[in-house]
Image (cartoon, rainbow, N blue to C red; front, side):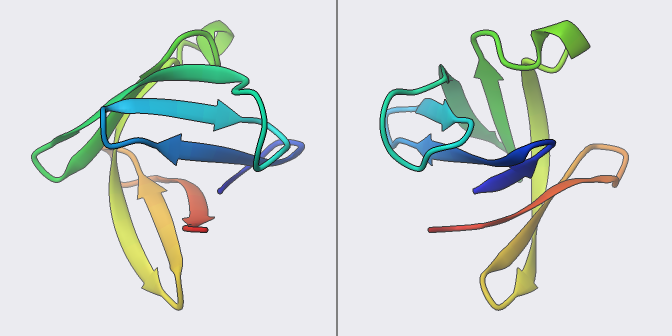
Length: 87
């Protein structure tokens, strides 16, 4: 689950390298889909359209464990992009 500007988004990272992103509901139809892979110690993903207007359809992020089931997504500059939990 990743908080966004108007609530939460839910991401399903599948073992076949596909990802399903839902903007407001944990289940149901994907609002966007794409691909993901691990590259070194980074999680890299590319979505079809989400973030296109901002040039953010793809990214590679580091994951930092904050304890108690909370994590941070951190960009290559070391900036925190979002916090999340694993459901």
